[in-house]
Amino acid sequence: MPLRRQRLAALRTSQGYSQEELAEALAVAPSTVIRWEGGRAAPQPHQRPKIAAVLGVTLSELEGLLFEGQPTGNAMLPDAPLRGNEDDMKRRDVLGLLAVTSALVTLPGPDDASRGHTAAALLESGDDLHRSLWRVYSLSDSKQSVLPAVRKQLDTLTTGLAEARTAADKVRLCAMTADVYQLAGELFFDANRYTDAARCYTLAAQAAQTGGDDDLWACAMTRHAYVELYARRAPAAQPLLAAAARIAQRGDSTLSTRHWVAAVEAEAHAAVGDFDACTRSLDEAEKVHVLDGSSHNGGWLRFNGSRLPEERGACYLQLGRPDLAENALTSALAQPLSLRRRAAVLSDLALLGVQRRDIDQVVHYAEAAIGLADQSNSGFIGKKLDGLRERLAPLVPDDRISHLDHRIAALSRTA
Image 1: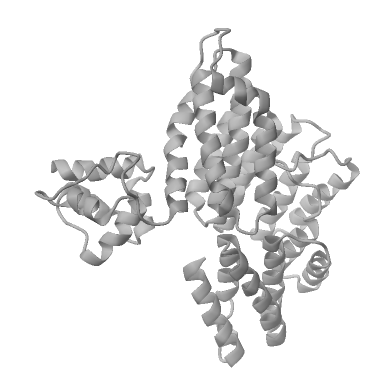
Image 2 (image 1 turned 45 degrees about the vertical axis):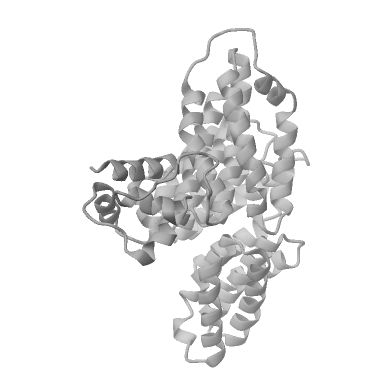
């Protein structure tokens, strides 16, 4: 492999991409990336700006890595000029920390009473800061606004883990790491980067296990399962949820963890068409209402049962029970909802209109959901609307539906 192409491969690795993941980000075949890095082909001119943006380098630096005799700059230095979306750069930074943090979570540390400054500061105030990050995330219409603070805290946690000197300190820091990597996974999920979200949830589960917190562990597993559900791979989600349910049974019975696992299990049952199992899981989830107000922490565990009407409605919609779905969804819409949750309910009500071939209902609810998507630029809402769009084909001859189809198509390219 030419030396410059070795540097191209090293840059890809440093930014947290496998060859397959880079190919997916660039909408090319993995074999194309292999040929580029092997020196057997070069990207076409029109492809190079996107490659430079994804890898976080300037166009001239990229071309220096591709062709002999051109200046390379120093693309690996942190202060190299970077172009492209700043949030994308921070996402790659998060992924770059994964391998280091994972090693620090699993490696034993010496039993030394001394403690570094960063570890001490985290142990004193880290939990409060993490709760604040979750609150900001839950209140933000644009979830990606939280990314810079999350990225900075993950870097701090990695430093703290490297400094930890006692087993007790490491256990606490691992639990904190699991907390923040779950939030990082949520940010990736909202941006429709499901593979990256799953990687964060995997490390969160690993760190929670090392930290000895079963509820935190079960929540990380449940979030990982939800990635599979959202990618329409319910059979892959079911063993993850079964494991999460077993772990949650060992957790704190005063917390809502096991009830949240049941709610997500209901979605998995609905996805495979099992009405009875879905109903049983929803009924189990409803038992959260017998717990007191301290059953969740507003951070990595936020389930308090308030979402159950919309979740029940989504399940019944998927099971082809429009009567039950409408009652649950309209009940959900009457509650105070975050922008993202309201958009999800509106999208489901529009989909219900598709099932009934009620064009007025489809247009009414879909237009409202698109308006919310425009406000938030949320990938989650865009994905919900893409799912609706897939079902519009039988109604497209109607001009209003055709217009709606075009609006969703335009949104999905920018969300």
